[in-house]
Length: 328
Ligand SMILES: NC(=O)c1ccc[n+]([C@@H]2O[C@H](COP(=O)([O-])OP(=O)(O)OC[C@H]3O[C@@H](n4cnc5c(N)ncnc54)[C@H](OP(=O)(O)O)[C@@H]3O)[C@@H](O)[C@H]2O)c1
Image 1 (tube, rainbow, N blue to C red):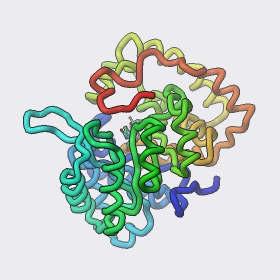
Image 2 (image 1 turned 90 degrees about the vertical axis):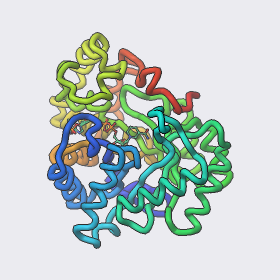
Image 3 (image 1 turned 90 degrees about the horizontal axis):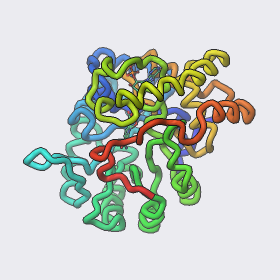
């Protein structure tokens, strides 16, 4: 499969979501993380996604450690991180797009990553107190200073993207997109095509649901899925049952279910780059293999008959998890 456009560059069609390095979906080890990063480089997965909040800096620090082992590695990857989510002194989560926080967060991220600049810097959540035009104007100053290569937005509505793009080109927009989360088809994927932004599909494995290895809710060793409607006991039982024909289809096509779910995102539009997250080199390899699976029109239709629009039980986020996400 051909590489996909990211601004004036091109990246491997499947990226690497590094949120799991911070223990988001269960425990992991430094050795496993470094091995997964090494494998990513070996097989050419070169579009890496992290954020300052993933594991409170652990994800960025792991990448920093990996890059420090061999300085030639930096030039081989397109590195993205994010800012805006932070804890107030009394422990509440807030979204801060102020110039001061942006500068402070960027400096801290560059330090943890051990780099002079990142290729892509996302506004992780839009701050409703500050117009997006002002936030992007401020980010543009960091582009001019060479600390960031390009600007990205996360979980925004199409209107926000258009307003931001009028101030400075937006290279990428990320939002959850998978067989069970198809909201971006209502305008965001189209707005990205119109403005020239890469649409970065996060959680393309349905936060593990399409991987075929998740069993009972009780076995989930993480705080996120315990608090998420789709993995809540009754919903998850229904979702598991609804996924069975999908797993059978993947088996009959001789493709790993995670790879099939990722191949679906790749087939939906040429400007989509999915970023699956994993803790292991083996799973990453399986995800990257999506690029070698030919999901032609007939198969795509068959897949969408097996998992039709709106098949999932439960919303993609709980009330608390929806905070800061622009609905449209
Ligand atoms: N902007 C945002 O607000 C936002 C929000 C969420 C995520 N993201 C980004 O998107 C990335 C991906 O999203 P995500 O990690 O939430 O969800 P995901 O990629 O849909 O799923 C991750 C889960 O799938 C499992 N998995 C991955 N490959 C597998 C395979 N081949 N077989 C079986 N299971 C597999 C992983 O377990 P193992 O670790 O055991 O492989 C993990 O539990 C994140 O890392 C992050 O960079 C951004």
